[in-house]
Image (cartoon, rainbow, N blue to C red; front, side, top):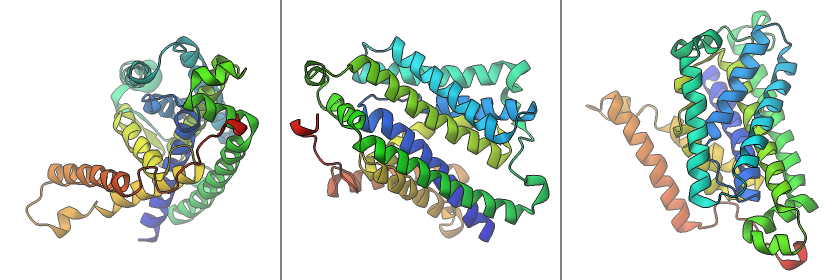
Length: 299
């Protein structure tokens, strides 16, 4: 039971890191990134392959951030003129492209069988319970650190300019803000954070496969950011905790409600997550921790 709770805490922490990364791109910059699963996969595969190849884990995680951030900057540069639905479609296609490459490039990713035996910090020297405790503490420290960094980013001149850009791109450009450069920087930074979350996922579970990086995970993270409060790092963390609490709290429906097959339980869980979002949006349209409106003085 203790190991299960610690594992749930780790998963919630990884989701919180993904939500904090998405919050930089979407919450602050106003850019819809449905390719979150792609950056998640890039970070996971980069760190897994490099650490199996002999690179220290911490260095492999940094490399994963650099690769994911670089790809994010390139994708943002190529889609600078796209907005709203068009940007969402392109990023969704990117996420699926990464998953298909991972599923078909057997020489690199081992295809649909995935990669196992990914090293974790001191995994061989600790019992499974001790490893879970260590990783849970590590993930809490990392979430707090990234939350603190993104909170300071939000309060910085760049963060205020990004919020102004999200509210009205034309007005931000007229105010003299380098809109195109800021969009690329925000996309790269958010993608690097998401890639870091992918690296942590691989090192914790010791196994990754293409099916783990389906677009559904992007939906969960969008739900987390929306429910918590778009634009607020605290809201992103709170939203991730709420989403994981609902997903894990409904895992045992099959034991409580008789005659439900596994497929029906999975569908019911998705329905509950969606219903939760509808309720939150009805009661708290701006999210559980709403962002303060941008004023002209903040631009």
